[in-house]
Image (cartoon, rainbow, N blue to C red; front, side, top):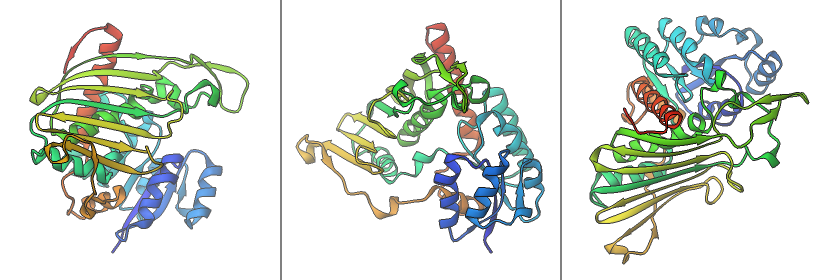
Length: 351
C-alpha cells in the first residue's frame, strides 16, 4: 500500500522537486495539500487532482487528516519548527526543507520532540542525491586519492543581481529566512562537503555581506531593506586535518544553479560539477593512472537515486543510511550559527 503524503507549502521547491518526486515514486501518493495562499492552493489542487476537501490553509488540519501518513514540509524557514513538531506529536514522520530551523535552540527543540515521538525524519539536503556526488563520496572513502588535504566548494546563482530586479521576497527577510545566501545555498555546500569526506567541522571564520541593500516589496513600488547576506566566504578547519574553503553567492553572473567541489588528496584529486552543462552533474579525476590529467569519469548506474524515493525508502525502513536526519539538522544549525557569529565578530569560532 502506498504511503499517503500531505504536502505543506506549495511554492517553487514543492512544484519543482517535491511533488514531481512524490508522483514518480511507486511507494508514495499525494493525498492532501496546504498553503496559506488559497488561490495557489486551489490551482495546485486542480493540477495534481487533489479534492477540495483535502486542501487546507492551516497546517494543523492537514496533519490531522486521517488520509495522511507522512508530512512533506516546503514552507519558508520561520515556520519549519512548529510544523515539524506538530507532525511528530501527531505520530507522523516528516521530510523538511533546509535550513531545518531558524537557529540552534529551535533545532534542539525539534530534535527533542522528534526523538520523544519516535518518528522518522529527513532533512532535504538534496545534493546528497546527485549521482556524481555519491560516486565522489565512494571514491574518497575508498582511499582512491589518499588522505584529503584541501576541499574547495563553490555554489553560485545569479538571481540576486540588481539587473535581475528581484523583489524583496522572503529569502531577503531575516525574520523569515534567518540568513541569506548562507542558509539558502551555503548550508547545502557545507553539508555536501561533510557528506562526501565523512569529516566534521571544528572551527570556522567567515566574511558575509550584502550587495543590494534595498529592493521593491513584492507587488509594490515601495522599498524595503534587505537584512541578510548576499554572499558568504567561509574558511573551515575540519577533522582529518582538512582545510576547506567555501564561496557562496547569489550574485554570480551567468550561473543558474552552479556547484563545483574540488578535493585534493595525497595521491590525486577529484572535481565535482553541477550545472556546468545545464542540469548535469559530472565528476573528474586526476591521479597517476590519468597521467595527472583531469579526466571525466563514468558514473555507475547504482549511484542514480531520487530524493523523494529515498524518503519513501526511509519510511519503509529500508533506506541506505545516507539521508540527513534531524540530528544532521542540529549539526547544520550549530555550524550556520557559528559562521554568522564568526562574520559578525571577525574571528575564528570553535564549534
